[in-house]
Image: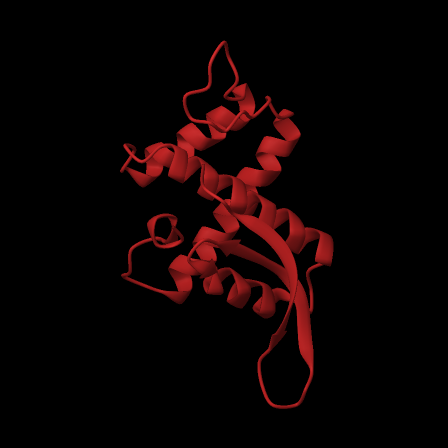
Length: 137
């Protein structure tokens, strides 16, 4: 199983000693820096709760990506992720190892919007580059 966690961290962007206290998504390869950049850019008009929810959405998406390495098409991956949030992954067996219970449609919609906003921001910041779904992993 892919180990990914969300912690609160202090991010310094200059030598003033002032820091941003934001959620940091840690993977076995280290923190997801692009997500940290996203939060720092939005720190002055987004709530800590919003950042925590986005970080959790990213964590769940990464878990899904790692549990389904055979899905290479990013559109299909995102669509199937949304479906598994709605249906859950638990049946008589769960070969993915995710063991997700079905989520409420409102929660699925919020998660989908949070990820879409993040991916859209990333695409604007990195024109012509591969989308971050693959690069986050």
